[in-house]
Image (tube, one colour):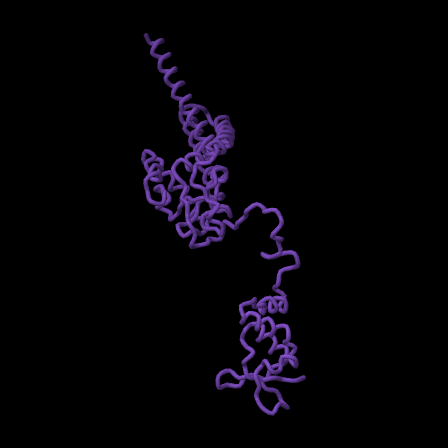
Length: 305
């Protein structure tokens, strides 16, 4: 088998079999001007003079085309040679330019820097919270009620039993909320069901996906935002990046679902139909509760009179 040498500066490299010379040329380590030599040659020669002998005709033509403003296909040939090329019909260029456009997709778990970032406004976050609240209140209430009933049956009754039932129900609600928010925010999409519906997600301030530990910590930080008369939540309406108190504590931001992706142009600043409908229903619900409360107070005042 013929072995070849090539010059790298003032150093002679080799010997190498023909296959190694071809691979190095494919990877761009050798050029057509690189000096090569094998036993039997009178002197060193430029690689372009022995392309036929080395079987580099097609690769050399691709290199010349690249130098004249065309395409450099050496990377493609290298991918084919080492088995990393995509299968026929796949890859970024496999789609016909005349075919119908498909639905946009992106890997939310990978942060793409450099694009515009649209932060989720206060009202979008409120709408997402209302959806999540409805999602959680049903299983939390049912499970808490069942466990409370079990505790009540097992207990002896009285004030102590009632306090225990309330404690068990509260603990169940806390664990369900922790699991729900912790798992969804740390998931690939970074969003709970409510945030998915509204089109927003939770990420690190750098755009990276948050870990499960950080997600659970953020859930407990929301409790602090709540007990401070919900001022921690209201901060999202006034801070630069729409961060609530728990976001600042955990280095997170709530952004449009297309933020930090390769398609930032799909982000939307407007509220959107889902957000508007949810806020309207929420407003009706709050108004109904106030009306009910006023009615109860008025009835109690009448009875007392």
